[in-house]
Image 1 (cartoon, rainbow, N blue to C red):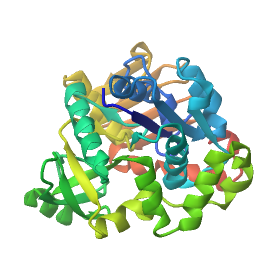
Image 2 (cartoon, rainbow, N blue to C red):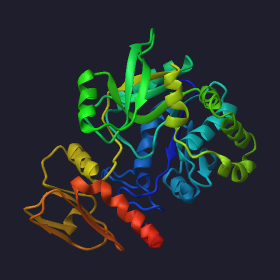
Image 3 (cartoon, rainbow, N blue to C red):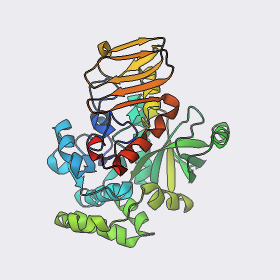
Length: 359
């Protein structure tokens, strides 16, 4: 267990990409999507406990704070930080950094999303430990996932020269989601890794990097940490910006970001297609239809895909390939794995029509 290492878990989400299984009131990190008997949030804490012990902060929306506390009864109430409103990842992670700066001057913090699925615990712990060592030297460290294919749904990290004495390389740049042709080139070069949004850094280093481009932002975060009663007033004034854009990209351009390769399996469960693929990998078999929930409620004939029988009814699928059927008490989704990303358009339309009770 690395000394003074703190796990920071941003737990946010709008519940759009896995609708209607996930909703704004019950985003995917609060669900057990793998059938392991633990929600994604609980599994994240389980994974980090050998590294951080009780040194854990969960930053979540005010609407989800009570559910987080129920799922993590061993976590002290003051270790669950409730955001009054969504302000994107920089505000959430930055507030945790400002709090840890005051709690533990020697802290190194690692930020790990609450809704990722990761395998190979030993490789994960070795990777995070290497990242902590680099962070102690003043680097902003990101964990770059070794790509297994030319994915177009992730951003990428271009790694440069190795850093002496560290199991890390200097980051040349962060790049946005590429086209398939560009992604194939990235994979062939061997110099690129998937950006999973994992950062390890000393809290003061992170806040000072932010201050170089937005000193007021850093000042407001430190003011909230010093006087928590000011949270409601100051929070709405914070910029809505991701940590990648606010800190990681400008810091990489200045040569101050390091990357440790993550040689463990990783999935961000981005839609029902990736969820179906993940379940197939975890099961290690060739079942034609994957089921989340009560398998006895599903009947299929000459079909492949994913079925979620969460509505209390029997679901039957006949003669359809790569289908996605999600049955809940108040909404039913039928789509294909190839078009699973388009589910968020339905959520947007429901919101526009005033059906907030369904999202």
